[in-house]
Image: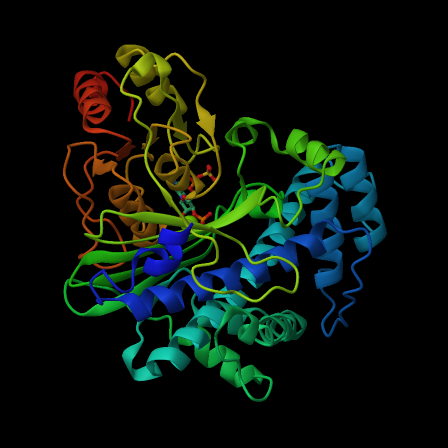
Length: 446
Ligand SMILES: Nc1ncnc2c1ncn2[C@@H]1O[C@H](COP(=O)(O)OS(=O)(=O)O)[C@@H](OP(=O)(O)O)[C@H]1O
Ligand SMILES: [Mg+2]
């Protein structure tokens, strides 16, 4: 631990001074974003959230209703519980058509996650602008301000402004300066609208995924806050906040309901650092780090007990674990099952929401990550940039399925990506997977 204190998590003193301030601010901002997400998620899951919002239109969708429904979704997959919540919150009866219920469920989950997306985006954008000057900050991010302005729900915008202000009020605890007065609606919208960069091959911009793994977030499962600094088309800093990342790796592979039951029986304490971390790395440093999320009312003292992370040394496919998206609509499970069989992977795939998969490889909790989206889907840069730097600096390899590096210089998308994304702990496993993709691609339906 002494070494860490001396080199400040690997980026001060003996290390190159490049990007040290950017990294420091980015890690603190992601810590704050995780704090914000946790607050919202606690609101979704807690028994008594008192957020009652007035309705200005006739829409039955209120933030309070959204919360109680998401709570029901998060705590129970039992349709009767969900239906009961719908009945109480929205006056929807058991006779309501299944299709209509599904549409309502989807739109409620979307509203909840969008609220968090916008709140995180505003918070991170505001913090970066305060630290580096708004003229120097250019951000590529998932949500655009038009969609928030378009939403005909003033209470949602009001709720975003409140969430942002509640979070920014805690900035001094995270070692950052908060606003002197609470931000108004226009300032929050301005912060969100600063995230309008289109990326590209030159200059410097940040890539932010405010809540990656939307479904994981609304279900109380894995999700991530991802922030990367990209310079001249190359990610140079990666920061990944993983609020629900369990320090006991076996819990990653358990179903989320099991995890929740166990954590209720033995609640994780702040001291034991059982859950939640921020991982970070600077390109070319050869080091990747992980620090716990700030807990309770503590103050963040850098490097906040950071410890280095490294990829696994496992090279034998029979002992390796591969991870992939939970949803087969996001990546073909049948294709990866074929690859796994042909290279001799024996373990069950670890299906985890979000960029937590990148974190799992960097931390040595899994050896391979594969994603093969349907033809025509274009991978977005914010879904990968932070994870790529962290895995590479932790000793791993990330390429497309043709073995080429991911290209972050072409705008919002990983243009030219060959078939899919493959991240591995080491070169030997990587070669095997690439070879297997080549051998089976033509006979696949992808
Ligand atoms: N059709 C399709 N195919 C492939 N990828 C898609 C697709 N649609 C969306 N996305 C993007 O995938 C992000 C979620 O990826 P995950 O690996 O977390 O998938 S999963 O939720 O575990 O299934 C997800 O990120 P978030 O939107 O932040 O959750 C999307 O950017
Ligand atoms: Mg995403």
